[in-house]
Amino acid sequence: MVTYHGATVILRFEKLTAETMILKEYLGLLSGGGVDQVFYTKNFPITTGAGATTDVESNVNVYTRVAGAATWVTLSNASEADFAILGASGTVTIKAAKNAGGDAGKAVSIDYFTCVPVSRGQGATVNFDRDVLVVSELGNPAPVELITGHNHVSGNIDVLYCDRNMFGKVLGQADWYNTLPDFSFHIAPNGWTSGQPDIKVTNAKFYSGALKATLKGLMALNVKFEGLLATVTTVP
Image (tube, rainbow, N blue to C red; front, side, top):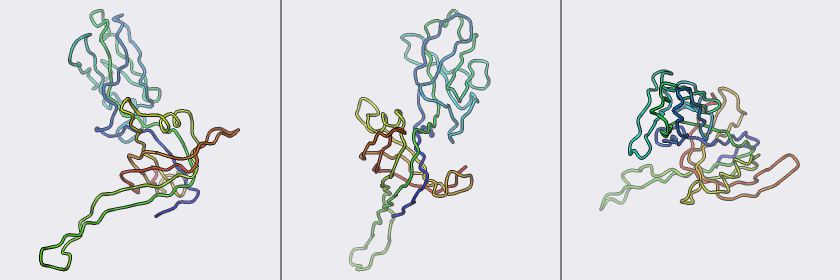
């Protein structure tokens, strides 16, 4: 067990790998007006796969589809000829050349990464469990090998200062299948200062705690979590 007293905890809603990026999020319909048409992603900022806000079109994929068609057509992301993005605001601008009269009514969708800080907190306890499997040979009383088994991470955060977005994701459900959302969060024992240690817990689900409303806002106390992996890096 490792306890970091007074540590800064930063909780993020992240989609940062090819397996978990947001795929074909629906943006809307083209007007066919022959002008640049602006859409907005549901989550922002748009980021790179490493979590940095980006305006580079090659970090996303944008598609159009004729009503009733089965397949999406990929727009070019090599330049701003077909579309442009502004990562900080989640803006996607389809250029006039792709919004001509024959394009009216086409659906627009996007693949993108995002990284949204939704809460900060203080104090964290992280429990690291790792199975060790003992391998034996028949007739040999002594073990011949130890094999690393599954990782498991659990613990609690003393205080989280939450906004409405955080409460909705932790207390609500992620989808119609009633699954709890996954979070990645960072523990910075020496503060969020470049070069200092950063403990990142990935694929964590929060399942219990206490809520407190104060004059300064909303707090979640003694919030418990289960996660898949904890890694130690440095604050960028």
